[in-house]
Image (cartoon, rainbow, N blue to C red; front, side, top):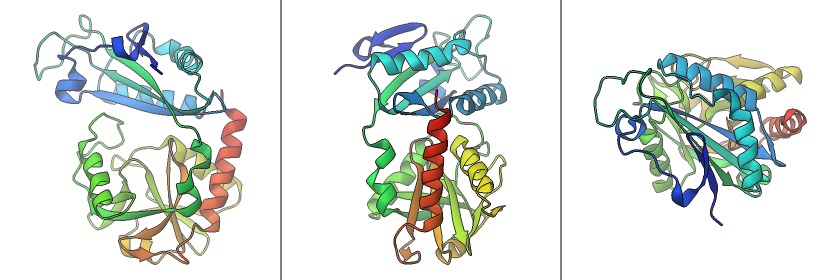
Length: 287
């Protein structure tokens, strides 16, 4: 089935959708993106994603697309047109195309942003087998640029990290800088020790995860102890359990780090409970 996508004000079959070869997202990775999950045909944490998109645009000095205030309607229409029950909606904004290649930003009064959205159908998203058995991660050096808090389309190194993990027979990689874990290739990282949830504090070093914020809020409401600080791989390997969060995984337990099994090698009670709480509470507020 051919998807219907959205490009600069038009709903089009994916086979007819085009963006200029001079678009700055293509030439310079000069763009930002968001991914919103869909469960039961409804959007999860949409307002959080919209606020983070606005922040990313502001941090890069990029103009909002003209349809910014219609993004909720556009998301809902794409869900309807593509009959999405469980899946994701990818949104990307770039600085646009000035009709040629130049390092200097184009004049925003002349060159308008490019706005693209498309859906991905993911049946079984809420009941992923990986959430039941847990995932294995390796550690790699974090050599990304310094503004990881901006959700840009500069995803080459995270992609390379996932391939390193695949080559090692694992599922993902945790990145390490100055001896401390920053985050996963496309997710935030956590460990649990003596019932305490430990995760790196917000800064320019990590993405300010929308799912992260919700999960930590739910954890505190459930009277779980949370400590926001860096941790090492050795500390993670000695933890009782570990997990990741993201918009597409929600909460995934981690059962092995660099070949070291955590606990019994099965998902721990904290990660399993947080996944249950997150899904239950997020569905209540889905729109």
